[in-house]
Length: 327
Image (tube, rainbow, N blue to C red):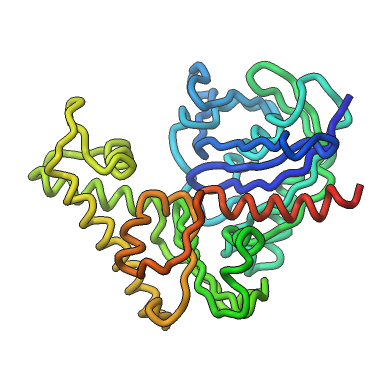
């Protein structure tokens, strides 16, 4: 027997996040899904899907998505096979294999660059929605489902529905730190339609690449790989040959502060002074730079307790109101 699934989904450039449940279940049945937006094409050679990775077969191709993937997507457009594979892999996590008549209703986070173009927005929506029943094989089990409805919302905007008190009767700058970009949006008086919105390249990828360069210079030319810098950013210290290098702690902290200062200056050059406006910050990258954000922008900056999940949580609330209460 099939299910009706309501969900919010963000197929980001760094990772995929989804929140959803069976519409006939209980609120306690809500499930969170998260894995890296990376892909490996099995036509290059066989590998096992290990860790937080999945083997998925779609339209005659076989791929691995998740942490075993070869690369993250740096494309401006999300209308790519990678993001469709990630979206479908997330959807089947709410289903039982070998069942039919599964119906999916999604609130889908959409990048700002696509939202500004009506044709691109519709293309992205239809690309994920597919044309009729979708059949996939994930980890050697068959699934099928129909995406009935998709509601498009701007990425990061879910925080308006999760913490509306931060936006009531105010002019607020929302900073959304994602995998590739930092989204900047101005909301006024709780109106969901922003007065200004754009993206700049101050996301997690740039943060990690620049940190790798900074640490390489500090170590006098010793090469620091992307993966090592990524771990150092999370742990606050660079580990070399399994030994934490305590001398890098202050280097990393200073780097994070300088990174936020550069982002703040970039916004000032575009006519937005964060010293004169209330600020909210969301996104997974915030976890890595929260202390720097509070030092550079001010301790009064509003950061949700789980900034990596805040927006998708808000979008799930939209999904519940839009889809569950209609039943």
